[in-house]
Image 1 (cartoon, rainbow, N blue to C red):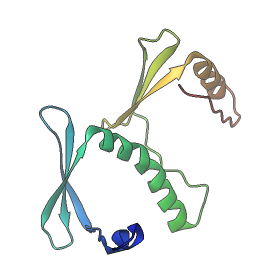
Image 2: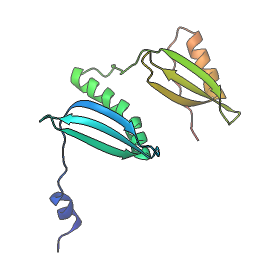
Image 3: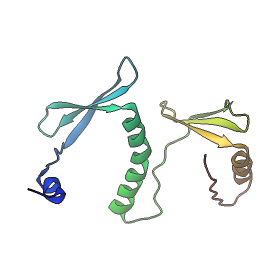
Length: 139
């Protein structure tokens, strides 16, 4: 009888060496996202992710990209940035928060829920010539 460690060691992961992102699609029911790639041998492959996993991937990728840049160039001050094309502020259903959407010129966008205290601190940071960092507890 094998123990759990032996079972894990016996499992192999399938690695895909992607050469190109080819397609991105959302299932008709909105529950799954599909990403199409071309692998190293030129074969098309796709990965289907439930919405929850796609969301987790979206939250994970920016930090991984930044970490890769810092390692590649051996510079901890590097940041992975996008040019700001537009922004919008909307009232959220919660009267104590707004929704802030930041978009690049090509349409990539991220929405943030911003509490009133955060809005005030952010406004102050933009109105002075100083570097400010702030963290707030989230709910």
